[in-house]
Length: 141
Image (cartoon, rainbow, N blue to C red; front, top):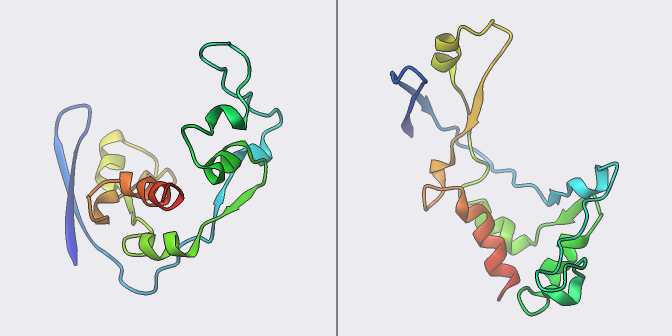
């Protein structure tokens, strides 16, 4: 299928490019990358709004299922994506990565500098929001 993308540069000119979506087997990742594992200093926990002390897992229990709390405090480099979540995400993932050649030209970039953007319009909602909504529904069922 063919789709069109339009964007504005700082001079308010409209640029439109047409590209074909590639069809074929979909490779959805089996795990999420957790940056916490590679930070030289751990991110401090959020502070309790009423007591101004570091929050622990029990503070989040009234709001979130334990599986999400465990992910939030995890220092594991990779967190497994449940198969049922991967199956739903495979309906529109991965998002196509598109090159913004006309924007590169407008900016006068050298040939070795390229600008890419993710086209999220292939999801059912036409938005990136379903990428996080699907796992949230899974963990909150």
